[in-house]
Amino acid sequence: MSAKNIPRISETEWEVMRAVWAKHPAPASEIIERLSRADPSWHPKTAKTLLTRLVQKKALDYEPRGRSYVYEPLVTERECIAAASVSFLDRVFGGSLKPMLVHFVESQQLTRTDLDELRTLLESQPAAPKDKPRRKP
Amino acid sequence: MSAKNIPRISETEWEVMRAVWAKHPAPASEIIERLSRADPSWHPKTAKTLLTRLVQKKALDYEPRGRSYVYEPLVTERECIAAASVSFLDRVFGGSLKPMLVHFVESQQLTRTDLDELRTLLESQPAAPKDKPRRKP
DNA sequence: CGTATAGACTTACATTTGTAATCTATGAGC
DNA sequence: GCTCATAGATTACAAATGTAAGTCTATACG
Image (cartoon, rainbow over all chains, first blue to last red; front, side, top):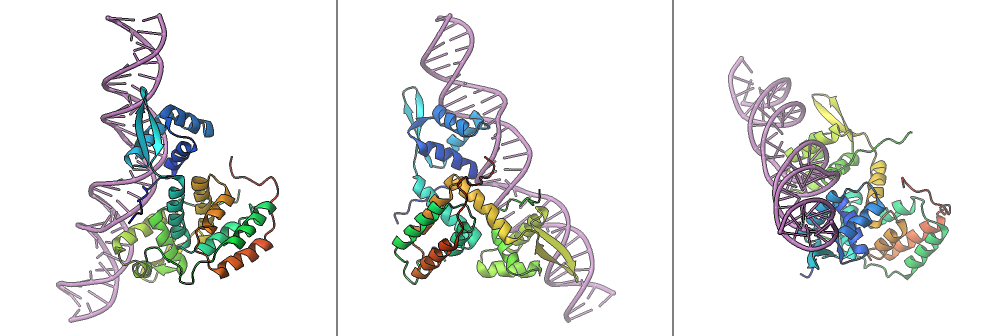
């Protein structure tokens, strides 16, 4: 199959990945800088460790540039979002999409505009076939 | 505050919790039985260990009944879903609800009926105030 | 009554995760 | 050229997680 398997990305690693996706390739110093700006409690050493781990996991790539290295994602944000979403959906909602959507819509954080936009989006959606394709049973 | 703090429930532990929520109070044997039925690869010893851990974490309670014990949730499924959802939303979507909903709506697993029902739901939703209440900044 | 057995209690152990500190090599500045 | 700051590499270490295996004990059955 063509399905690339997405490495498992932990909670903290997600923050790092998002800092890389934001703009890349980028040297460690820059990524660490972004992380600190978003959350000052980030320790540079910790960030560096996570970068290294993400390289080991093949979530990031790592190339010499000048006298230093730059990091680049090996997996796209889209792919990772999709993988994490399926996992979350299975774990928390037993794989059932609609109850999950209902939960979030009812969480009452949507503005009138959000609601309108979502409604429009729903209208333009093609319906899934009756026998929905299921992931591994 | 009245906010009970929900223990962190791991991936595997979620399966166990869902087996308990399904019907309780229930003895270990029954919960293990349910788990195996859902997924035969469950080892009884593993399930028992997880039950014990969930009791330690105060996610489950544990009472003698007859000559054995029965388990019961100390946290509701709703609470846990809410906690896990916030965590997922923050981690994967940086806390932004709408992009998340868009992602799932576009995942194309919704039937025409689902879509219709969601549209109705959206229409009945009260909009959030302009300055949305944010969790801890 | 003695014994196998089912639960419950205790212990095990590798992996992953969060969080760094230390060591090392190399270039930049004096 | 020598020295110090830096980036990268190596090492550390506790807690959480996944996955069980032993042990102990009371009970039901023969």
